[in-house]
Length: 180
Image (tube, rainbow, N blue to C red):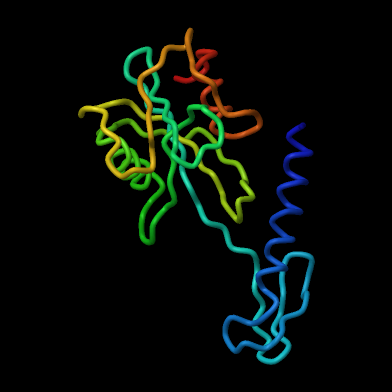
């Protein structure tokens, strides 16, 4: 799938989800109707609502020449990916990255840097990717979301997520030595 095809498919899936979940006004409960291609309006109070996004982060943590790759409990395949999680209220993206890594692996990280972002329709997610460096701690899967993981070399990565996922793009950039 090309990036353009991905964009179009994600956009349509997001708009379909939005329309299906916003048939009534959240303020007064009256029916809502399309106001534009990307919004609905209450037929009673006039409240116009646009699709909302749930920001989530993924992070590639490196320790020397190795990267931390993990297997999440909810993965349907035996693949390894990156630590990920949703941004909480009043939290910056960088704070989310550090918190998720600590909660899920018991590791402290440093030098958090932005890599890129991608719409992700499961549903209404905006994935924001970062890199970080290992600072301290022993790898422990603390909160039950991850079932396994470890430090992997570029030469022997485990089974990885499929393209065009942002997680895979970030892992590929690391494998190809394109990260600073």
